[in-house]
Image (cartoon, rainbow, N blue to C red; front, side, top):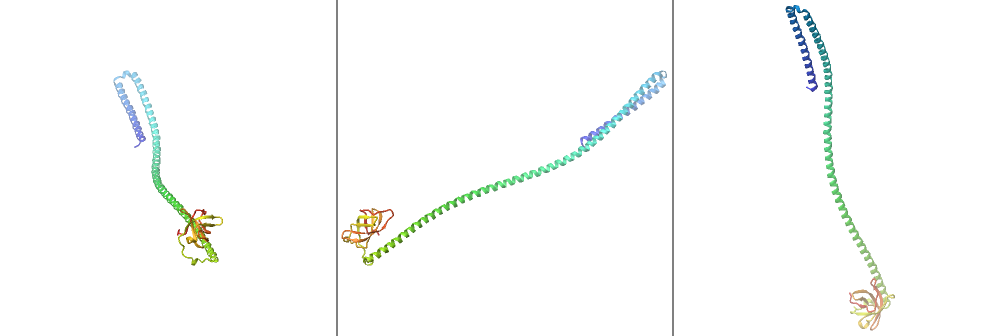
Length: 283
């Protein structure tokens, strides 16, 4: 039972008790009055005037009691009205309480759903953090592979550049060799036109001498070795300076102690100088 209902019951009990007290008081006063009236009537006939006064007083008391009873009845009616109002308020409060219980239930359910949503969000955040970590690791691995690929590409490009440079050098060597072959073919044809037969030339004996004169502009060289040293027309002698290879010339003119000829090969950046060594024993 709610507190308002208990208050209503207590008020009803109070009104009932007040009514009983008033009724008991009235009956008691009435009984006392009748006894005294009979006693006074039987025993005190002479005191009629005083008794009449007392009767008046009793009547006044009775009227007062009646007024009090009416007041009590009015108060009871007021209390009943207030009780009715209180009952209405109790009903309203109970309805409001039910509404609040419903709202509390809705809020509790909403809080439960909100907590579930928060938990799902936390789980999603954890999965996202894990995915980000994996993605960072994959990105670092991809960057490392890319750096390695770039390094390998640079190395391959350098190798290709070196190979291209080597190919260019080889092509230059091929061109130079072709030029040498062409020059030699021209020299052979020129020698043949001068009556020199290379096929009948005997194997050269070891020759070693020095350059006496050189004209690099005209590509002419004179050395201090001749027929006395076994040099013959058409011989090819190499020119060196210490451990440096200078070039090569073909003998066109031969004397007992000298020979002269045309420079057929000159190493890059070199010039023939007097005192350079001439020899046929390099190969």
